[in-house]
Image (cartoon, rainbow, N blue to C red; front, side):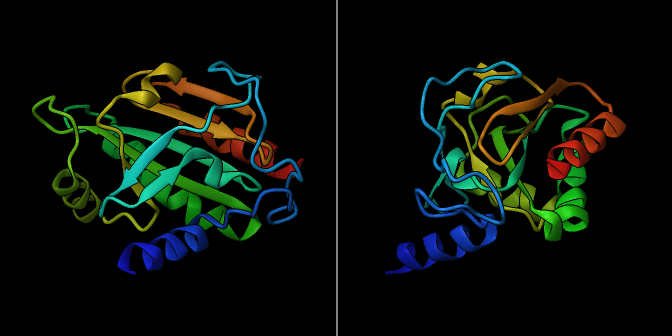
Length: 179
C-alpha cells in the first residue's frame, strides 16, 4: 500500500500523462515509441531507476513535459551545482511545464548509490525535485559525470552536455518550453 501511495505521489510530482494522453499540453505519443538513441535528436529510452525509498521511477514518466535530467556522482565537483541548478530551474519553470529528475549514480567513494546515499544527497543539497538511484549506471549511455540532459515533451533529447554551462542549459529549456 505504501509503495502504491508513493507511486501516486511520484506521478503527481513528475506530472506524467497516462499512455496515449497529452500531458501538460505535451505530446500525445506518451510514452514515446522506439527507436531510441542516446544522442541529441534521438528519443531517449525508458531507463528505470529507483526512488530513494525503492519505488520505481522511469524516464518515460516525464513524457508530456519538458524534462531536465541531471546525473550526480558524490565525488564529482560540479554535480552538486547541477543538482541544485535542476532544483532551481524546476521551481522557476515548473508552471510552464518543466519537470526535473536528479539521478544519483555513485557515492563519494565511487560506490554504487544506495537508498541511504539518495536520502543523504537529497537532504544535504536541499532538493525538492524527484531524486532517484542508478546503481547500475544505465544513465551513463547518455554521458558520464556531470551529465545534464533536456528532453522535449515527446522524449526527444534536445540538449546534452557534460561540464558547467548554466546559460546553455537555461537556453535549451526555454527553447523546448516554447515549442
